[in-house]
Length: 303
Length: 264
Image 1 (cartoon, rainbow over the protein chains, first blue to last red):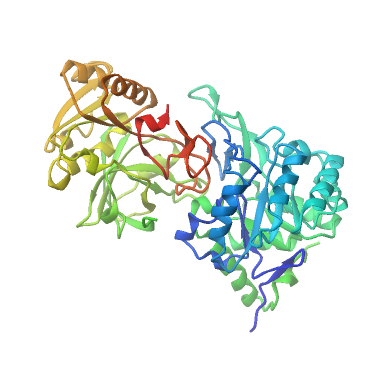
Image 2 (cartoon, each protein chain N blue to C red):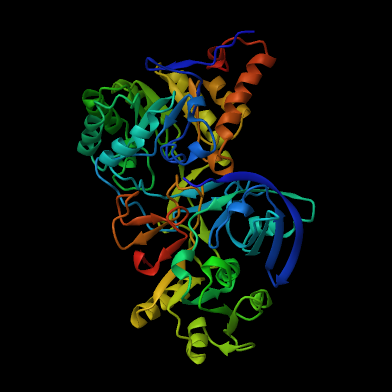
């Protein structure tokens, strides 16, 4: 039976609905040793700002049950190096590229988005207004509906590529934030970023992370992410890219059924570099086994 | 880019060397054959609720037989799982990872290998590489520092002179590896070291004062192990070419650095 795995996000067609989550995959340079990036729906690059950022002190990560905390602090080499090295590298692959953008201020986001305007290899932009580990590194903009609408408008005005706003789950009602991003002109939503957490090292009697708090990711947060995607899918009309603890095809299918048009595999890349391929193949097998010809039939099928 | 492999290795045997210190011998397809002294592997837990790989230095690699030896300390649930493996079990690895010690720069010189605690194992493969063949050192000494119980010291004896330091004075010099070096009038041209941060800091300072070349193998918490996630950075003296800031990835630019390259 013929099978369609392709989906569309803001007018950009992805060959399948599976991508990698920003920050877990670099720009794919290192992971390309283990898998063919052309098999992915999209590569979502690690957050880039207009200038290089040093990030936080170490330890930057620690493992938690079925998850991990990270407080990398958006270390990145800046837009110039990213464009010359990372985007050039990605030219050789037949996949879409979503560039994740971060900033300390509205001006920095806008500057970075403008710098990327002529870059043909950047198919979509994902705006990180939800990093929990950098003060004024996004979360300050991402937790207040009015702030979200305002910054989305400014970025939308400056951007050439479609704009995906990446939302924080560290809010009382994420549907308010999703609606605000939509009202500001967002073309799509990515959700969820990490949940703020803390681990204490009882042997050393201090914080496990130098940053004290970090963002929780991995299978531990998957049910939270599915719930939030489902809630927002009822509220907004723009497409949602669902992420949060996806480690298998079953996890990805849940997210699609909850209303996500595509999914990202993040922390699971650390356990097995080829997880994302297993998720793609697993979704395809599910379609076959259930006599479903088009993956889009699954999107939001659970209401 | 050098090749990195993900393999399911066969456990050939497990040995308890001291309290909480275990040795695993593993049959690999490619990793052991291409592993240089000072490189490491990412070791994955069978229980996927522990999702991050554990970076473990290579203690010995036999390229002909494809056998890899890992010696590690049980520090948590992951290493506890590895310590319970039996002959015939499988263990997933990614490697070889990182850059090892610069053998060609050590050849023909008076080299001192300093290991502290669980930093001792990677020095064994280095001792073997410098004890003969094209990279033979002109003089080779290993100094191993322990809290109390010794391990691996007999494995070093065929390859070099071995000095021992213990914190409690139960064997060798009472004190640190530096105390043992001073007591034995050690005067190397190059120091290669792996161990806890205070030891590396002291050796870096000692080497700088004496004008001795010094190479340090660092440790940091890792997630991807291959250079993508930027979890395991260390502070670098200069702006790094990859990161464009004063950070270097321990997993990729390291774990072995020239002492003056990094700030500890």
